Image 1: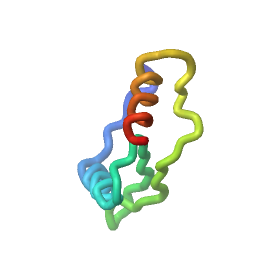
Image 2 (image 1 turned 180 degrees about the vertical axis):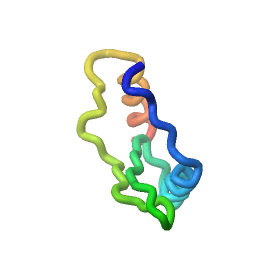
Image 3 (image 1 turned 90 degrees about the vertical axis):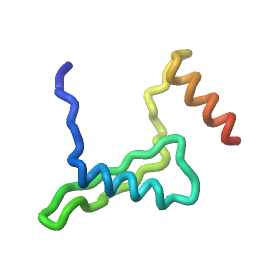
Image 4 (image 1 turned 45 degrees about the vertical axis):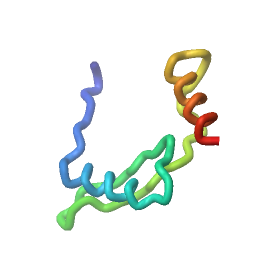
Length: 73
């Protein structure tokens, strides 16, 4: 597929996992944005709410997400 899927560096993935582990509850959706610097991974944004998850129509991912939200409520 194009473009090729990016693979995060191990250090970046470790920091992203640590950021998520520090949250008081596990989010249903999260995106950890950052950049690698000479000092390591630097967090730029932790997104926990996404207004457009591309969940259009009745698809398996849409239904799974709705089920997860309902279970959480």
